[in-house]
Length: 181
Image 1 (cartoon, rainbow, N blue to C red):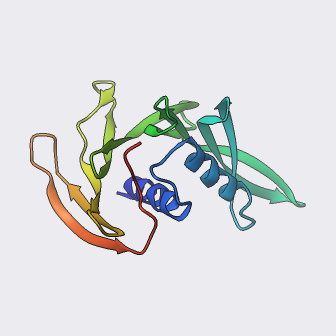
Image 2 (cartoon, rainbow, N blue to C red):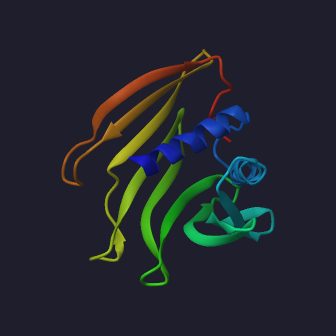
């Protein structure tokens, strides 16, 4: 669920940046805010394709004495965008120091529909070397003729069960999160 919270924070960041949907620009803005945060125990690096961040690396900063610091690999995020720059997926990896390799953990899929914006969270299944069906989902729905976003959170225990509504709230007086392009 902690991983799903990051997806939610990315959506809130998009709202606060007055973005219609999460885009390459939204990811870049989040990265810029993180690297300029002075109270962080993390360092960041990115790979880019043009102006798009395609991979973000997160390192833990360790102080080893005499003011010296080392960086230890921690997380990696791979981003995929549609041709219009809209974020379509983010894959997360954790560093495994025993295997000296990145271990795939999860994927977030972002979908824009008619008056909806959906984020789905899927876990990576190491046995099948593929992603399982989504277990968490957030649906942002625009209430017509109003500046209100309805945010619905869903969860299911496994892929054979139906999504169950966990929580629902209305976000009022914020920029519209999505719009048909």
